[in-house]
Image 1 (spheres, rainbow, N blue to C red):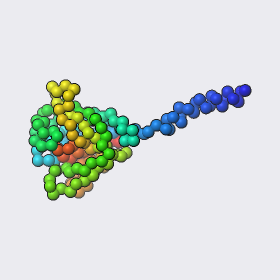
Image 2 (image 1 turned 60 degrees about the horizontal axis):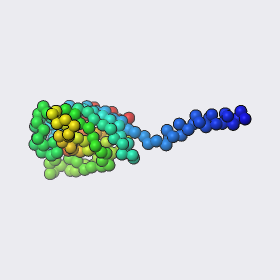
Image 3 (image 1 turned 180 degrees about the horizontal axis):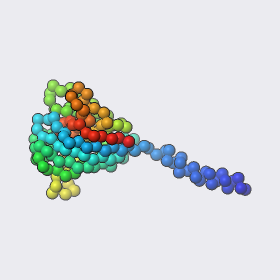
Image 4 (image 1 turned 90 degrees about the horizontal axis):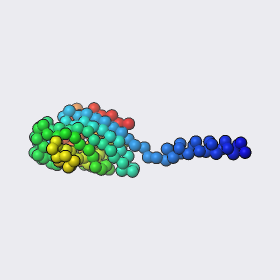
Length: 171
């Protein structure tokens, strides 16, 4: 009788361990980019982070952003220097082709969501727009250089704005 009670007690204690091993791993990241640019006009400051799980589609991210120079092209067109307050994301994107400058002569590069890179659709907000996003654009944050041919490190990209160097941490 005592051995049955011991077996049941040990079995109950192991249930949380087995269910924890069955859960998908969430990845987390944080970043700070002082200057994202490269397209004909505009630049932004971007900071933030969050958690994601590509297998389940879980995504919870956000941070601050500000246009530091007027943007006249792409999804953030109309964002004036000094505008911008925050961003959040709406979906994980498996992979995307992108360019840091948008130049016709620039070769298309590819980024894939994995343990060290997140490709996502992000909503950007200006002060005064309340809970309604002002702009929606694709965004890449990576622990690795997205364009090793260009001088410096480009580990953050925003659609229609360009690439920039960011302090990035993934877990």
